[in-house]
Amino acid sequence: MEERPPMSGWRRFARVFFGRKVVLFGLIVLALYVLIAIFADLIAPYDYKQINLQQVLAQPSGEHLLGTDTAGRDVLSRLIYGIRPTLIVGSATILIAAVCGTILGLIAGYFGGWIQTIIMRCIDALMGFPMLLLALVIAAVLGGGMKNIIIALGVASIPTFARVMCAQTLIIKENDYIIAGRSLGFTNWHLMWNHIVPNAFPPLVILATMNIGMVILMEAGLSFLGIGIQAPDAAWGSMVSAGYNRLTSNPMLSVAPGIAIMLIVFSLNMVGDGLRDAVDPRLRGTL
Image 1 (cartoon, rainbow, N blue to C red):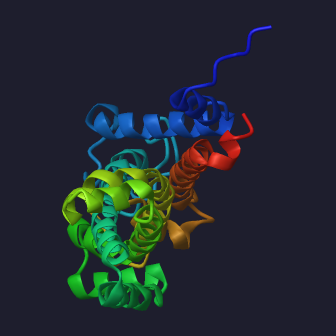
Image 2 (image 1 turned 180 degrees about the vertical axis):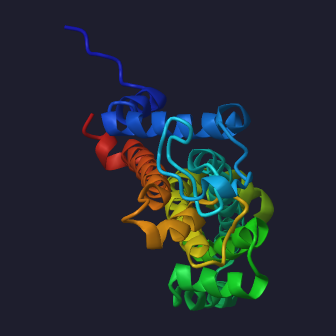
C-alpha cells in the first residue's frame, strides 16, 4: 500500500483555513463590505449628506428603507457610505502600528542591552494606559477628523506589535543561520530585514487581522463620544450616538449601524482565528 505524499505547506494551510465554515462566512461578509464601499456611489439610493427637513426622523418605508435621521438624511445611504471610513481607519491604523511596532521591536530584540531596555520601557509605559483611553487623549489633543483619528489609534496600537516583534526577534536571532550569517560578515541590516522579519511575519499578520476589529470598535467609540468622525460625514459610531436617545421611537438610527459594526468585527475575528489555527504548528502536526 503506497503512502500518501506529505501535504505541502500551502495545501495544509488551505485545508485548515478554508475548512471552517465560520471563516468562509467571515470572508464573504468582508468581501461584501469591500464591494459595497467601492461601489457606494452606485448602491446608495440618496446623497448621504443631503438634508431634507420635511423628512426628519421618518420611519422605515419604501422611500427610505431604514428611515431618516434628525436632519432628514437617508439612514441606509449613510450606513453604506460609512463603510468607507471604517475600512480606511482600520487598515491605515493597523498599517501604521505594524510598521512602527515592527521596527521598534526588531531593533530592541536584535541589539538588546540598553537599546532594548529604553525601547521596551517606553512601550511598557504606553501599555500602562488602556488603548481606548490613550487614543482618546491623543485624539483630544489632535482634534477630530479621520487623519487625526488614524494617528491616535495608530500610536495606541504600536505597543502590541512592538512586543510581539521583540519576542519573535529574540527567538529567531539565536538560530544557527543567523549566527552563521554574522560569522560570514553579513550586515545587521541584511540579517534583520532578509531573515528575521520574513520569519516573524506570520504572527504579525495574524495579530494585524485580529486587531483591525478592535481598532474599528475604538474608532466607533471615539465617534460615539464626539471626538472621532462627525456629521455630516458618515461614521457608524456617530450614527449610533445620534440615535441613542431615540431607541424606542426610531430604533433603526442606532440598531442599523450597531449591527454593521458587529458584523464586520465578528467577521474579522473569525478570519483572524482561522489564520491563527492555520499557521499553528501544533495544529498542523495533527493533520
